[in-house]
Image (cartoon, rainbow, N blue to C red):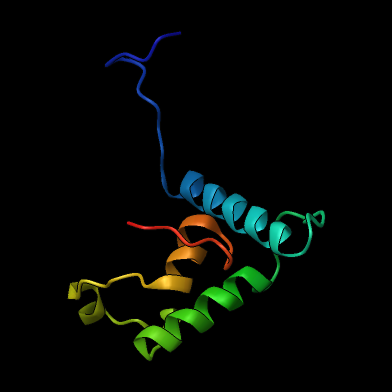
Length: 96
């Protein structure tokens, strides 16, 4: 059925959460040599640990400790952090 004004796709918080979990699981699996990952994720993944570590190196703060005032700052994504966020790996060098 084509998308129309009467049958809009509902994309709420639960759907976003599942999508994010799939992205994290996929990237974690890739970092571990395509290891099979069990969903629902339990605990922090290697991918998330790398991402948090790199974020803290660049900005001096764990992303889980961000406060509302941090959301007002424009952040650049240098090198390894950019590669982790956009490609899910550290060996990709992408220009933005």
